[in-house]
Length: 241
Ligand code: COA
Image (cartoon, rainbow, N blue to C red):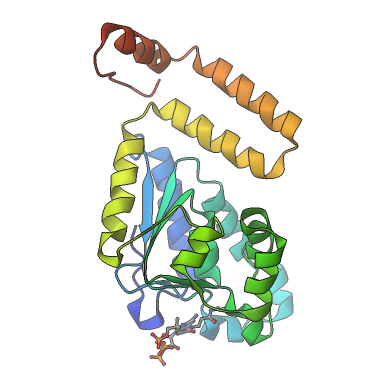
């Protein structure tokens, strides 16, 4: 999926956000779609909320805004979502990159939560997700200074999985997607669910979920195929059941 509003630096207007949610909803229903890669193209990932739209939003309208539910739909996408980030990923654009399951950044990518410069704070998860990802100290620094964070620092903070040369970003993200697409899909889906639970659930609950998810996978045809292929010394042929 390529965000394509170059004139507004891929700013996340409500309609663009809705398009992302709708695209992920249809990918969720599509058995042929095993993994999604989201990028903003070669020069900018996304400059965040559409400031022209934001300028007209009243507090009352924001309270009943559809945007939180659109973000929820994106966050709850059940298949792997891989981010390929080149250029600026700011505000909501940074939050979108952070909620990807695996984010590949070009060396020249620049992250940041500059909302503070507009007199507001992030509203699509950064205050919560950054603390969990990068820890309270870095989260405070990012959100309170609104500073631009280079890809290298984002990687060191654990906010992205890999930093590659700018012209390799999409290629690398697609290569990761291809690797994951060949894996047994039930296991991939449950891995995502259980790994996500690790961020929020108490350890005991997460460990129980992990154990039960793995126990359920023992009943899958793909598990049978995986072990049979291993013992037969051949490549497995997974069917996602
Ligand atoms: N919302 C709406 N329009 C935006 C936008 C945003 N978040 N970011 C950029 N644009 C528009 C600009 O208004 C400009 O439109 P114009 O040509 O009609 O004047 C166009 O995109 C190009 O922006 P410009 O600032 O000239 O591009 P740049 O490449 O020099 O800088 C950014 C890119 C992303 C660094 C810069 O645009 C920026 O800081 N954007 C705001 C980021 C932000 O604060 N996000 C948080 C929002 S809550």
